[in-house]
Length: 218
Image (cartoon, rainbow, N blue to C red):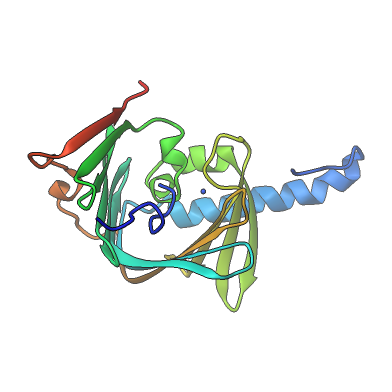
């Protein structure tokens, strides 16, 4: 059997001056950034796209490539299928998250709790108000794209920084940085926003003969 541990991604301090005048402008900019992000995400009901993913170490060296398809629908529904160089499926049905690894003949089931929803893909399928409450948001433009940088206000997250890149209303890239400096880049193509997605996309039937690991913390 191939070594499956080395080729899979791990399944992502602000300081302020005590002077009131120095806080006014940054706070206003932060509020504006959160409002801009809300304008992008609030109308989002569903999203589907192809994706290419790269994992880079702290020095920028490429560690892994992957590609596949994804579908999400609010609230809390997601299907993320890695097609190459290995196969792996993640499905959220709104109550539980299933991680299916055909090579290992194993599926892991975890309740859709707060920590799980802080993973980047599921984060997009959640409530926008919770997103802007749980992250400090910064905004900038880069070559005509709108770039939002999110820094978690809690330490109980899988990443230290998340960047969302939009071309107009369309999400085109995600960048995550973890505590080791490792970065994950996800680029979306052939994207469709608010299209019809069959509900069966977000159902998962556990195949016969597969080991089931349950991590239910509810």
